[in-house]
Amino acid sequence: MLAVLSPSRKLLRKVAAVAAFVGLAACDPAMMSAPGVGSGPNINVNAPVSVALLIPRTDSGAGGIAASLENAARLAVASLDGVEIDLRVYDTAGDAQRAALQAETAVAEGAQIIIGPLFGEAANAAGVAVADNGVNVLSFSNNPSIAGGNVFVLGPTFRNTADRLLGYAAREGRNSVVIAHPQNVEGEFGKAAIQAAASQNGVRVAAVQSFPFSQEGVASAVPRIRDSINSTGADTLFLTSNAAGALPILLQLLPEAGVNPTATQFMGLARWDVPAQILSMRGAQGGYFTLPDTAAKNAFDSRYRAQFGADPHPLAGLAFDGIAAVGALVRQGSSDALSMRALTQNSGFQGANGVFRLRPDGTNERGLAVATVRNNQVIILDPAPSGFGGAGF
Image (cartoon, rainbow, N blue to C red):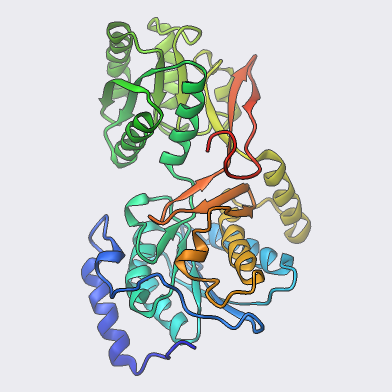
């Protein structure tokens, strides 16, 4: 049974402490909390499990996302067989300090695990706030810098995608890569993920080319990227950019500058099938990118539409995954179902977008398909695995 926090003085003291950490981009809750953090509370498997869902309901910029996350969580609760979940929703308003306060409130009201919040800073703050209560946080963030201790990230990570693509490329005989990334936070995270994945898969990083995050910056980088490929003999070009960033410009200008996609294997961290216009670009033809398990995603989308009369937000499946993991663990009948040991079981869980598992370092691994573009159409080269231990793992 969780001890209910006394008085508001303790709560205010904790929130004040969290506020001191909010400005840090990569706080590690494990370093700020008592021993045993993330161990998880013991539960009564014959009673409803109390789950707190932290979402930015009143954040004007994320209201639609919040509603879709809540819908998906309720869909997952209704889908559980023989497991009762007492789901309570708390509004973070998209604010880190409010997320910390709501996490504390949720635990005081009996929450045994927290799902959410959406944003990395808020998830970090929530994790710090409840770390000494031994309550784990399954956040919707994909930022690995906040993972660890009692905080897990459910969002797809760059490292997972890079591992899948470079592992597949290495099995196909590719052994050297040039990395091209914008000079921003996302680009730096992407570069680091690709470098780590290259090392793990025996692929040589031949060169790294960065560029200012502007149209002029991208254009000026194209000849440097081409020259790096030519001078190093790299057989692969890995782009970190997405469709809202430099990806369309690079896919257009690189072939025009003489980088032949049939000779150099293009690949990217982002999906290349959204928007569909990318599929017709010359640089996309033959390129590698990843997709979630198509059958699982289609099944989730269909159930969501039938229940709510609309398509789910692309992130909605993360809330479904969090509830699905809790349900699967509680169904096993162990009182430590919400402990770190249980959450990081090697077999993982079946989620809205296929199989996934949580790692001891707080990150996640997802079953991804390797896809390519042929004649402006998406073709699956290597399907997403149905379990761990198969292709890509």
